[in-house]
Image 1 (cartoon, rainbow, N blue to C red):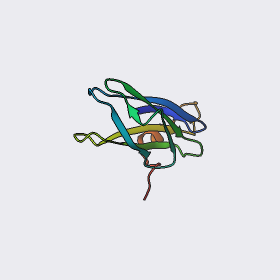
Image 2: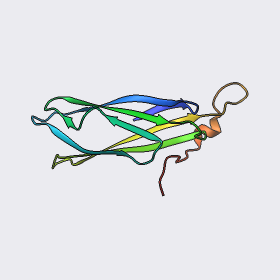
Image 3: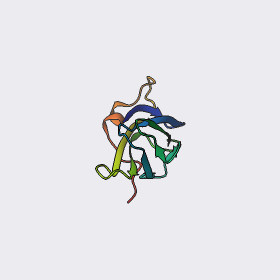
Length: 118
């Protein structure tokens, strides 16, 4: 999921809809992000049969340097055929503007992994 360009002075909140196309409910065992720059709030631990689940996601960009943020959201389920769902999330955080008020193209072209755990 590419969130495009976002300001480094704010946090970005969005909803991720998880659709269940199965004829049985799905239990979400665990939902996590690879770093603490992302806050995840599920609406429940169960996705009803043929229903959907709303996952509230907040990407914290305050104090981030200009560059690419790459994050992985992982959802573990009780589905034997797909026990793990990974959602990649990317965004370009802008903190500096060039003299004309546009993002510096050199910064845009230089990817940087900001949200990474070693």
